[in-house]
Structure formats: structure tokens, C-alpha cells
Length: 149
Image (cartoon, rainbow, N blue to C red; front, side, top):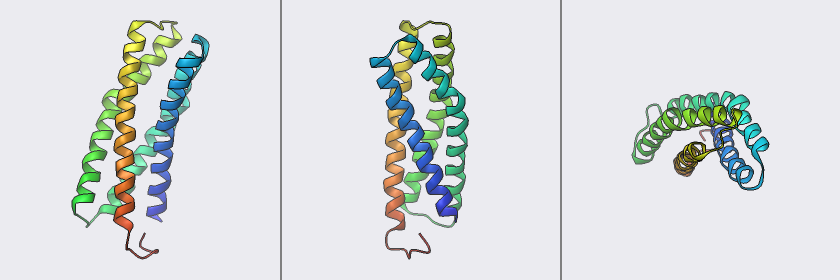
């Protein structure tokens, strides 16, 4: 059961980050200020209210699944998860809040796009880290019985 919770939360979190990243690229390339403002609001509310719990459940359930286990894959997953969490809390969440605030004020200026660049870079880093964790998670369950996986 814990494995299903972990998979669901991890897929939800990764999917939301990918959605935020892709929708930002599309809307800021093809749409106008009103759509940018609406997207930035949606990323914060309800976006972050969905993403943060999904990431927390992923981390907690992953810790439970890894309990009593070691090895290079588990160690790498833990290290990457710590980096992704720090990146999310220290870079991505503040960027999302600043971008929403500036967009709501109509300040789609140089500062907005500099922060947006930082957010996109940090988002790409997190997608990469989460993708590597997905890959290593699949490797950890290879060879185990279906009930254990």
C-alpha cells in the first residue's frame, strides 16, 4: 500500500511541476499579459496547495519504503530528494510568489522575466532530479516479487 501512495504522490508532484513548466513556456510565448497573470495565479492557488502536499507525501512515503535499506541507489535518491526539496523551498516557491505578485500588479518587466528565468532553470533542475529518482526507483524494485514492489 505504501508503494502505491508513494507512486501516486510522486507522479502527481512530477506531473504538476511539468505542467507548471510547460504552461509557463507556452503562455509566456504565445499569450498576453492577462493570460500570464491568470497562469501565475493558478500556479500559486491551487497549484502550490496541491504540489507541496504531494511532495511531502512522496518524501515521507519514500523514507518509509527505504527504511532498513541502503545501497548506492537509495543513497542517490535521498541526496537528490534533499536537493530537490531545498530547490523547491528556497527557489521555486519564492519565485512563484514573486511572479504572481508582480503579474497581478501588471509588472511584466525585466525583473519579472529575470525571476521567471531563475524559476524555469530551477524547475528544469527539479524535473531532472525527480526523473532520475523515478529511474532509480524503478531499478530498486526490479527483481523483487510483485507483492514487495
